[in-house]
Every structure is written in C-alpha cells, then in structure tokens.
Length: 420
Image (cartoon, rainbow, N blue to C red; front, side, top):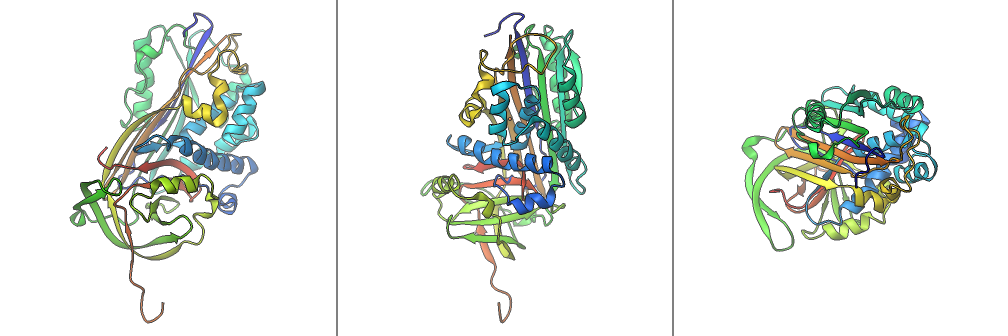
C-alpha cells in the first residue's frame, strides 16, 4: 500500500537491547503510587512512570494471549510512541493520551527527558537509552516537533536517501547494532524502504548487569522444567541459597521473588505460580487484580533458588496489539493525523510496528536486547534460631519483569519453555 509522493514511511525502531549477563529480570507489574512518587521528582516524570507501568500491564495482557514465551521492552515501545505523540493532532492525539496513559504530549516530553537522563547515569551496571530520527533528504521537521524530540528525547536527526534503500537500511542497522552492543542486527530490511519513506524513528535501550549475588556455575545441574502439568524437558538449572525479598501471595496462589543486580535499584522480579499448570489462571487474575499491591509486604528471608539458564529471541508484530489497546487510528491512512511532524503537507500514518527482543540468562547476570521497529508508515509504543529457607523452584512457566526501583518496567515477559 505505497502511494508515491503521498506516503511517509515512518519506521519507528524501538531498538531495545538489553544486555545483562545473568538473569535479565523484567518486571511488568504496576508499582505503588508511593514508590513511583518517591522516585519521581516532578509531575511530568511521575505521569510518564505511571503511564509506562499501566501500558506494560495492558500490553502484556494482549501479548500473553499468544501461547509460548513472551519477551518485550515496554519502555522502548512507549518511548517511540511518545515521540510520535509529539506530532499527533486531533483524535489521534487523544488516542495516544488514552493508550500511553500520559495526559499531554508536553508532559510526555518533559517526563522522558528526566527518565532518560537518569537511566543513562545509573551506576554499577550498563544501562543506556537512545533515540534517533532518520529523515528523508529534502524534508524538514516542523520546529515544535524537532525541538521536542531533540531537547527532551535527546534524539539526533540524520538525513537519508531512502530511494537508495540498501545504503539507507545499512545506516539504520549500523546505528541499532552500535547502540545495542551488537545484540540486535538487521532490524530493517532494504525492502521496507523506498522513495515514499519519509521518516524512521528509533529507540534503543541496552542493559548489562551482574547479579548482586551470582550463582555458582558448579552448582548448575541438569534438571526437569515442566512445560505443563505432565510434559517436561531437561534444562540447565542454576542453584543458590541466598537472603532475598520474598513473598507468598495466597490470593494469587504464587511466590514472588526479587533478584537484585549490583545496582540494587535494578532487579528481576519473578512471579511463580504454585501449581505447575497455574500460569493461565495467574494471568487471568493479574488481568483483574490491583497489581500495585503485588510488591508490597515483601520480606527478606533465606531462599533456596532454582532458576533455569535460558536464551530466547522473539519477534512480535505490534500492529494488532496496539490496535487492541485503542491506538488503531495511527494505522489508518484516512484517520491518522500527524500534522505536527514535517513541513510537507502529506497525509501520514503508521504502516507497521514490530519489536525484536533477545534475552540470555546465566550464572553471572543477564544479557538481553530488544528492537521495536514501528514500521510506521505515514500517508497524505522466629524464634529459637533462623527459620528454614524458603524454596523457590522455578521449574515451570512463570512471569518476569526487569524494573528500575520496582516501578519503571524496562522489560517484561513470560517463560513458557526455556529451550526456545
């Protein structure tokens, strides 16, 4: 559906590369208002953090309806969509506000400016987040949109000749590869670019961190992982006994464990059903319960932890999920209104949204990467001694999140099969 001269292909690359050497923990759950307000210093930042956590929950609910593993970076999708939000007008802007849970584009811009500067200065781990716009030669961004993306989203702008699609794709892929430390390659194919392409928006996030208390490699043993009530596979299972924040939630029928990285403001949170086949019921409960309460009333206890070593790569096409979240208008060439984006009078819309994500978990930490490519095509995201240790045996499907301060979800996912 390419219309010569009338189509602005705005491919939003949310390139999320998160490289964390041991367990890449994604926390999707909503955090309490108290925790968010403790981290946030301004109202726009708080609005963005609240928006990300709610967006994470909403998007996970949609993605979880597909069987198998799930891995995605909600903040990357949210960030790229928030950049697009800056140029949206009319009902399209209203759809962004309701889906991203951020009341105004200005609040999103100001909030992300603070969030990005903080994430890019986190000590003791590597955590980087970057944005970039690739613009067709001969076109210009409108001043208000240009200022918002450059000053608040810290985005550079590079001019490309999209008609020379092979060279243009190589330039985009090189930037993504660099920002993700070689974890995300070939995020865009030359066939996705042509003379009608006007804009490519990219967000890259990269994380690499070691566990605060690593697993001993000598303790890793082959053990069963139960795919469901009956079927099982043998996988490398990491083991350790450690003092961690833990909670047994009777209402959800789960155990919850927090595994901190060397910077303890970043951690992996695992929500493990008590029953081997309990994931479906858990996800249904999470869809209706107040997730802000999940992380409350956790206590430090000695825990026997068993966690599978894993490596997963996944591509998720986001057009349908985002449409189900209420953002379908941006994909409609007749309804989308991005009148605040470029000086040209062309009608623009988003053609495709895709995210590619990667995670590897081992004894040292976690290595993970994700690339969200919004192929956005615009036309004309006790007592008497210590108690015995708790047992947290993650030998069956579970949900996991990687968060900042238990609140800002950088990655989120579900492990159904550690072999994939």
